[in-house]
Figure 1 (cartoon, rainbow, N blue to C red):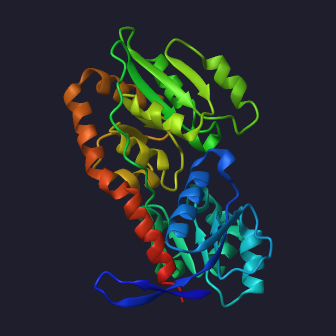
Figure 2: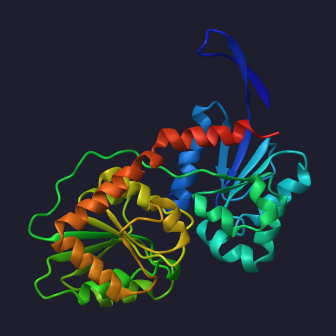
Length: 331
């Protein structure tokens, strides 16, 4: 670790500790998922703060002043190795949705990662209460972010609904397709689903569900997916578990209201009083909300207003400051 002299805003000089940080993530940018986007953003924020950051799927043993690992279970081997080699150096573990809401309850590796961490990071406030009490004091909340998008033209002849989620069980990816099929015959709802198949049989099921009301676009580049959100009247998040869905940040940044499952991860992002929740796995309730958004302009406007009120929580400047503060407080 090296100290560099820098000019402070009050005219005085100060020092900043510049660290060599090993950033371990099971999902590199090519994965195009939320964890990969988080890793890329955090690497950028840390480099902008002057730190040297090497990102990889596993720690290769090269000297580092700190380890920052995404995913307690998947990155456990790197976490345990770093703790053995550098027992006195900071070790930060960012907990994903499957960590918080499943793995730490049953998986020995995930629980061991919690114990080894100098700091634990969760992505929304509600997640802290899910952790064992003895780990909450060393836990920090860093809310994810998305840059603001300029307003995009939305379809006039249809009511565009977007789902952005890879095809895996935790996302309950076909719930919107089921809901769309039960809408009134006069409905103009058209659902477009962005996301690649991550489990066997998912692609075949998606193709079998194709209809005039639901179309699978497959995996798209991140920027293209964001534009699809911006061109939609509505985003649906049908997940069974979420650590803090970045797609919600992206929807709020694009001015697109959200319908989401009433789960802890979504409550932590949108607030307990948000009007657009539906029960997990309830296609009928989702269909009712989609129909109401299409036909009740006041209800849709209220969702937009509530999302706009949350948008300041999801700015890149706010997330970057939280990441810098996380590093600066390390022993």
